[in-house]
Length: 232
Image 1 (tube, rainbow, N blue to C red):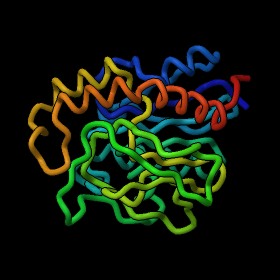
Image 2: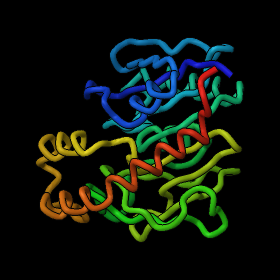
Image 3: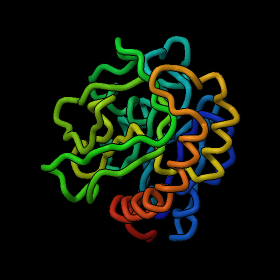
């Protein structure tokens, strides 16, 4: 197993999330790419330990409008064929599901999850999450479960909060990588989301963030350890 992890990003936020800090601490080589800004992703090689497809504001099906998505889908397919550990977060999870033939987009019911929301693990998958957890959310698009995938978590708003495809590919609708500082930036940036159906007000978000952030951090660190192991 290699030591390089390719991070596919969809914006210019500071790279201070929990995935970056965990990878650095564990000795991985962080290879951050921005296809939306012209970066290419190359091909999986023997030094590649895994890849993470981050969230973003792009509709995953608009490949004609956002041509760089085709490069990302090519990368997803190449990593699937090479049996590379892969994690998709929010938009990234939707991209993996869409690439595998599932529908992805805005549901008919207008419900925005922006804040900290409870998700429940599937009883048949006890190794994924030890119990209900309040996690960071910032989305209103969703996806259907791809054929051959296993649902890992859900909640009352969105049935598909996490899935596994095979043993090494995972999609998370939520954002366990986001720190307190990262979410506070979102609170300042996403001011136009407040008041929409489902969105928590800022006071409630902040209360739940401080109540549940440490548990979310412990969970994502354990999950990354199981997915990527240690750098070679």
